[in-house]
Image (cartoon, rainbow, N blue to C red; front, side):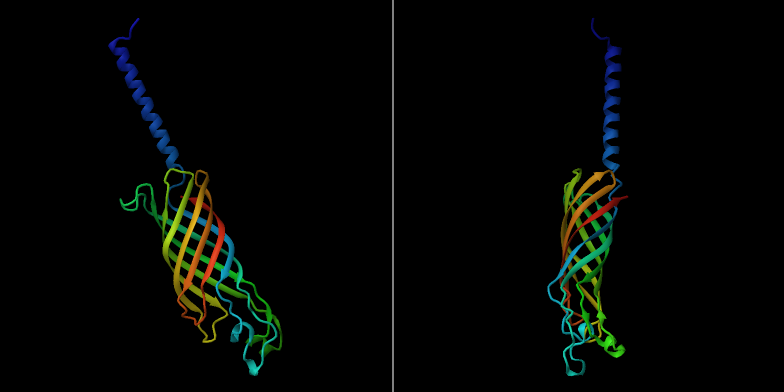
Length: 226
């Protein structure tokens, strides 16, 4: 027994509605990762290309023409920070399909290995204690995220702008620097808007503080898309 024209028409309409519903459900599932914007929290290891030993404020070198007891020669430590990624284009303005262009605004605190020294304030107070070496970096950078639709997505920062604060200040009593950064990483979608990733960067200071503020960082992060 064959199908009537009305039956075939009804079957075609039913199939079309089913396909439409399936496509709509798939699109909703793909879009249900929270969107392209993201807030993330990261942390890990930091290594400077040069330490800050033998400076006036770090370990008291040159006070009274004598050598201080102990050197603040730590050049590696840890960092913690966070970032806000803002989606600018899902195809890099028509130049790269499946590649997102984002703008990152980030902040990062670094604590380097520090030692007990006789720096200027402690000499004046007649005490000796650990003098911490710290840095704060704020960055604004473009980010390219590849492989749209995949749970695993690599990304790069081709070049970004850094604003750097060092503590204690340099020998010329300057603590503000500006520089560049380059980065790359991998991100994995755990569930919908929740992501985890690996993050590696190199920060190149311009030496406005008359110190070397170049550093490499390597760590991990947790991101929440919205």
